[in-house]
View 1: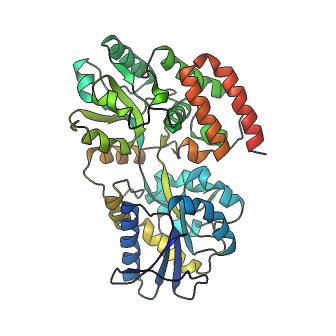
View 2: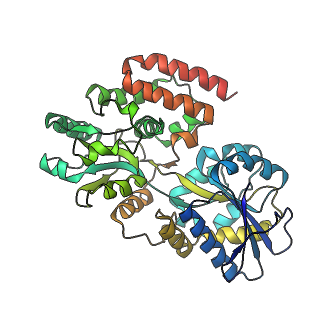
View 3: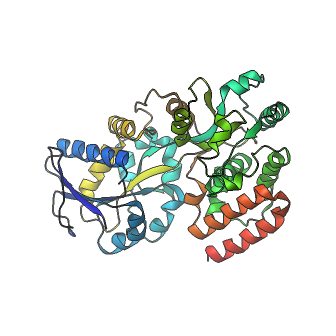
Length: 412
C-alpha cells in the first residue's frame, strides 16, 4: 500500500484518503521515492511547484519500492495518476509498448530540453518519440587507489592496452588489479555492460538487451573474449562469488586490490573505511574500439505522464518545472546524485564533478544497467551466466548457448 501525502504551501504532508479521480487544478503523482533522501527531495520539489502554481493542488501517493513494482501496471491501466516515476531505457519499454505512457515531445521542444537534457535523450527515446523527463542519474566507471598507482608508476589507463598493461604492473607488484563481489550477481552485469558498450557500442548493447540479437552472435563472443583476456591475466580477486559488493571493498581498502568497476555509491563506504580523497580516484572505463561513440552506464530516474492521466495539462507544467536547471540542482543536492540538465550546478564533491563532466561529454548514449535494460528472466539468467563465466571461462560456449535458449523463451 502507498503512503499518501497531500502537499500544501506550508510544506506540510498530511495523510489523506486515496483519491481516484483528479479534479481541475488537481495533480496526482505516484512515486516509490520512500527512502529518506528521495522522499525529502520530492517533498521539496512538490512544495516548490505548488509555490509557483498556487492554483494547482498536488496529491502525492508514496509507495514503497516493492509495492510500487507490483502496482504500477495495475494503476497505469485502471486508475492512472497524472504523473508516475520510473526508469529510462528498456525499463520503460513495456509500458510504452502497452500504450500506458504518453509521449512528451512537445514538453521537450517547448522547453529547450533537446539541448539541456541531451545527455539522456537517447535513453528517453523509443520509436523516435520521447516518453518522459529524466531528473537524476549517477555514474559508473572505475574507482581506484591513486596511491597504489603512483607507487607503481601507473598512469590512468585510457585505452584497453593501457588498462591491461596497468593490470600486469599491479600483478607483478603483488596487487590484484580489480576487486569485485559477485555474490549478488549484478556487479558482474556492470562489467559485462562496459565491455559490451566498449566492444560493440550502445545501439548493439540495447538491441541485445531487447532480445533482438542472439547471444551466440560473434559480436557477443568478441565481448566475452575481451573479458576472458582479463580473466586469463588474473585481473579479479579470488573467491569473488563469496563476497557482496560491500565485502569486496575490503581488498581495495587494505591495498590488496587497486580498482573496482562500480557505481558512485561506492565512494561513501570507501571514505567511511578511512581512505582519503587523496587515495581514491575515478576514471572512465577504457576505450576498446576507438571508432565507437563512447557510451556510459548511468542508471536514470524519470517521471512520466500515463496515457490515461486525467490532468495532462498540469502534468506537462510539472515536467517542465522538473526539467529546469535550478530545480534539478536542488533535487540532486538532496539526493547526492547528478542532475541531467547540463546547466545545473553540481555538488563540489570531486567524484560527482568527475561523473558530471564525463556524462555530459558522452556522445554514444547512456545505458541503464543490465538488470534494468533486460527483462527480469533474461537479466537473471544473464547475470548468473556472467558470474559462472568469471569462475569458469572455459564454459563460455555452453553459457552463451544457454542464454540463447532463455532469449528465445523470454522475448516471444
